[in-house]
Length: 183
Image 1 (cartoon, rainbow, N blue to C red):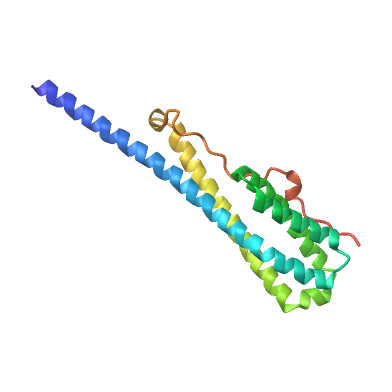
Image 2 (image 1 turned 90 degrees about the horizontal axis):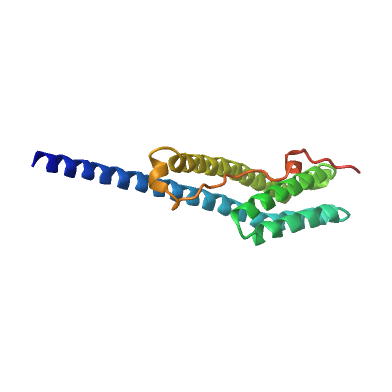
């Protein structure tokens, strides 16, 4: 009788532990999804601001069409990216194109003095900071999730049901370089 009670107690403890670990992994996975949605929302905010910025710059820097075309193409690439990995890559290219655009703006004092341009630049800078923070938060969530499914006993509970996730990485080293503008 005592042995049966001990066995039932052990089974109950293992069941509770399994359920707890499984729920923890699911929670971490959901946090990763939520963190990615935050990045996605900020990328959309940036995409919404860019057409206004491009139109403002066009009025002052008509011969900078190559830079404006690059910003517009990069914005479209972010909007059309179908996977998180593709959005990560396209977002990096857009950040680089915006860097070039702001560098071009330095050559036009009347553009820099334009209040509409200044507000758009401030809004984009704020959005870039939010995107940066959201990327860090996403990477923290991914790290926590990956640790949960790769360490014992989570790896036993996770089995093949949960797959390792990829954090936000800069795919193109050229994005890390400071843009240069020559006249």
